[in-house]
Length: 373
Image (spheres, rainbow, N blue to C red):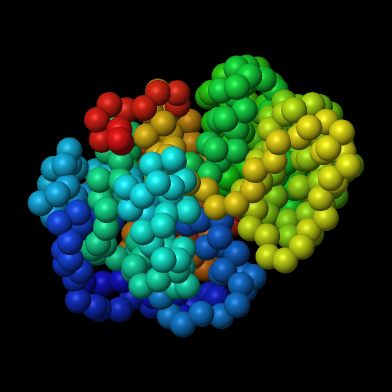
């Protein structure tokens, strides 16, 4: 089979390798149909992370089931499934609490497509082994295309957790999404879209990028443009920091803009220290969540939201043919989805080479059965 290897920040190559096989009764083998390029993937391609040994690229994907271990229940050959990027067992205490990122069966963090979290392979290939398949996979509902759901196993679920808990606690509450410098641009736009879908009566989107601000407005959010992080922009029961800013400046804006005993969630990846306005947080009792997302806990709910409004993400996604992967990765848009022919949307636009483009920059119930535990 073929898999796309990342050889360096902007270097990719298709290579031939042996197909994976079932290693345990709880395994499944799946064939990726649509792969979403994660915000973290884009940062890697920009050279923001240290160099790694070559690895199979991609970790957000929807796939077709091609083989099942004898202990996998509720799935059939040919089913289309969203697959969590994070490897977790589903049966330890942490997983049963909805915290697969703290899985105790897996000795260390384990994930597809990063090259630094174990030898699990990646999504841009012809076959993937899925361990603990009952926990790792969620069935696509009727009417939800693989391309639309490609990011459910990571970025979409991360965006969901940024706003869902606060809106469950205070239905209809105003939401502030602090996208800032745009380190995680798709998650910010996803968070705004999902907050609207979850019933927020006011979704404000704070960013420094005019193109993303315009897109956020087209999605139904109110755009707030700032060239740099302001101290505070209001008082919101629910705030989300999707800036990906390691300095913590935009995170500080989100925290200072969180109302008394409101919830602020950051999906940013922080290494080392970042300033946090503890005094302001203490004064208002801000509840702050940071750390790895737990996609297995949220995938079914996100898929249910997508089923209720199948086209809600169309303006965020740029869907391109699978065979154009290397060319498309040379200059990825805000959210690139690479899809096999059978997973391409019926109305997919005709794509032109980047050189031909003038401006290249141009859910609240569980689905029954498959994800219940």
